Picture 1: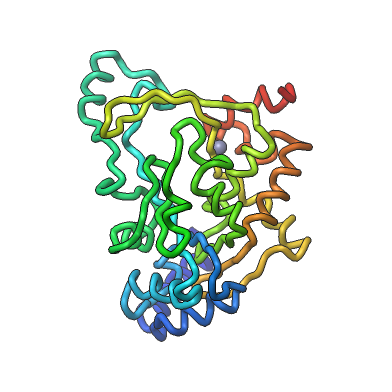
Picture 2: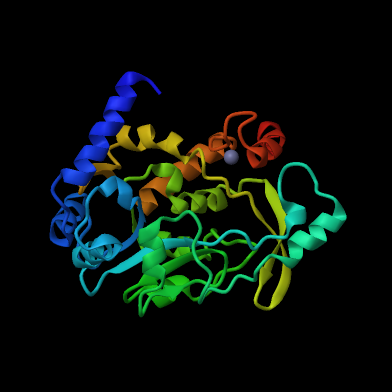
Length: 294
Ligand SMILES: [Zn+2]
């Protein structure tokens, strides 16, 4: 780490410890300023750490989101839960069969009522446990609260978990907004709907442990690590609003605008969202098909 980066880190920590706390009222004001209105359907991806000191913790940020959309609005958050896949489908070196059996025996079934979210942040993990919150039935799920929650989360297929007939597809159909609080566009799960619209040709096979047993599926590749590529294009076209929620740099985008634009980009360049060569096993496997235009 350079001296300047180190100093910036220290300053950041100092402000986090000693700066003014964000309250749910102040955060709701920041969320409204990003273009979130009463009655909206919003999917929020959050980093509470980036918001800084928050009076009331993750619940206060959830309260702020609910305040911004009001009783007629619906709040959604990602509720992905990893670690339920059959180890035979892990990328990297293939383990010995006896090891696979042992690893498989240790894989807990995914249960939407109890399985914790993985890597979604403390706000999403708190949200999915709140009374009244509904969660879609598959590991790449969405949790939602509000009048549209039942419609959004009711069904989800393993073979097309993020397509048009999925929770994120319904957020797109409802004209929802994606709110990114302290995180970048690589976290915006709604952009996977664009891959379905553009019918990207790569698929992956897998097997997941559900409460009903081990279940095989074939689904579209869902690496979103390079979704950040679309940010300058959205910005150039005036389709992204920037602001702050607490200390967190935040963005708000209409899901229709971003998904339709991403679909256009994918149709003219199928590999638009593939990660750089050699950095991602899944994208490297998909690349030959993108290049052949199949
Ligand atoms: Zn990738």
